[in-house]
Amino acid sequence: MSTHWPRRRMHHVFAPDGRAVIAAMDAGITKGVAPGLERGRAAVKRIVDGGVDAILATIGLARAAADELGGTGLILALDSEIPSARYGVEQAVRWGADALELKVFPGNPEVTKMGELRELCAEGDKWGMPVMAEPIPVGFKALEAHTLANIAHGARVSAEAGADFVKAQYTGTPEEYREVVEGCLVPVLALGGPMKPTPLHALQMAYDAIQAGAGGIVYGRNIVEAERPDRMVAALVEIVHGGASVDVAAKHLNIPL
Image (cartoon, rainbow, N blue to C red; front, side, top):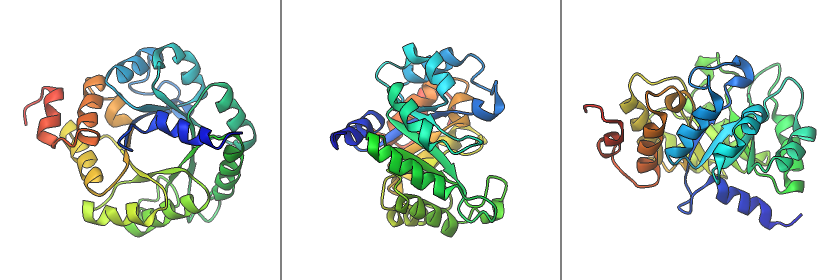
């Protein structure tokens, strides 16, 4: 396998400026019919029309919306009840995916999934398939563990395991989050997390993450559940790629400031 393939696939996720706006559309893997994704193909089309760089999707949604993706990057979510490295990489290659994603839980006393991440990265390397790790300290419900130090630790150990880029929770100020970014060996993209109180809060978080040196953002609910997902994507693109302020980007949303 040519060593050029991982780099080429990364160019399908990251724009020429080295940054990416990614829409996480993988909620159906656990929720089935998830808010904002009830009509999967239509949801993908709206987000692609907004100018998103890539989507994070299940194999089912990727298959159903293949005609809507065009040249937009595709990251396949491999979160599963069983280890997915041995079948997931080959499946991603067959479907023309550009990267894979796996959630891991550093610090979890029962299962961290870090071993699965190492295996996935090694298998991905054989096929020239990049891997995006999503480290969540201990677990989604262990909010007390979601400290800046633990988030930085999770990002670093994911990179050490071989991840090509990392999706990490945003917390604190831009100055504090810079510790996560600079402490990691690979690009860090800010995780959108729960639905923000207003679209402006979502835009502000993206702006702060970019100021901290993040390589972009991965937003799920804050894009797919927006009143106009295409306009939310366009506003985020203005911030991430255009360097726009929140006020300037918000003009895409037609809401009072």
